[in-house]
Image (tube, rainbow, N blue to C red; front, side):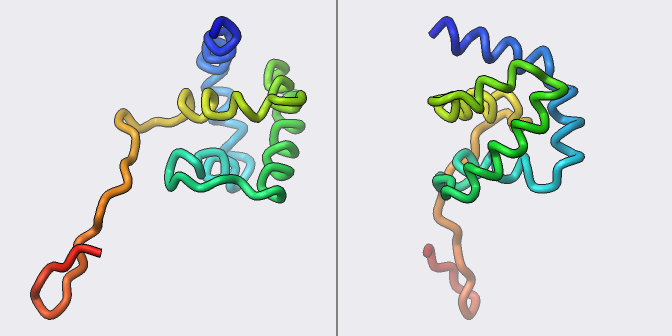
Length: 106
């Protein structure tokens, strides 16, 4: 728990640099937020792509090297929760579908 809080504080302190760097790397935030947005899991290729992003960013933000260590991917939800700009987490809900003027829930 203490390590989680330390990582969270470090991420929060470097948040602006992380946002700047993530804007330079197309697709990083979308890939990082994939489990938060739709509950999906990262594929092996996506994990490798995230590792490459972290290798690059750890040059500017050294504490990000923790995500490259064995077991470091367990801390990714902490990173995505700090970087998520939404106040409320997106929930999966039924979306009404309009068909011939009537609403049906899919």
